[in-house]
Image 1 (cartoon, helix red, strand yellow):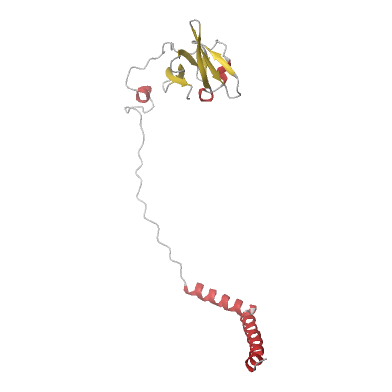
Image 2: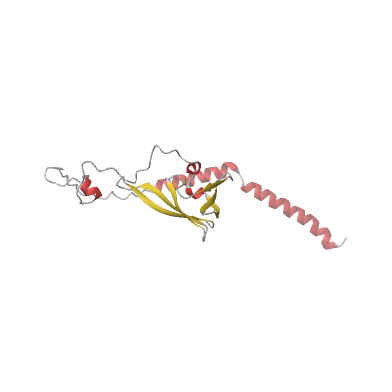
Length: 186
């Protein structure tokens, strides 16, 4: 063992011991907690909270509503247009037949149905429609499908598509026809 090695080993151990004692001495719990409490008290004592004043509110002018000569904002002529308002509207010719027995495909929304194909047997056009559970139903012109009283008005054999007219209530409460097309590439 050389002279340097004999001096270096004990010094290294003593240095490590001295550093450990200094680190542990710096972690004195009581001393650091008291210093922290003094610092917090000093900061809070010298700090004055600053709150901006609230903005001044403008006076509100009150108005007394009198509907004597003014227009009624909820009158049917103001809501539905300026035309003459009928006291008893005549029956809507597009009203769906409530006594008609619903067909099997009317349980499903139209976007859940899928056109599988079209075919022609003799002079009659047929369409095959698949429902979400995988069953396939045969459809002809005049059949109903979808939840909005959709009626098949035409079967396009060339483009493999169904022309459908749905009945929906419009904003005035009257029934309106909405044409829809269901194709194989839906």
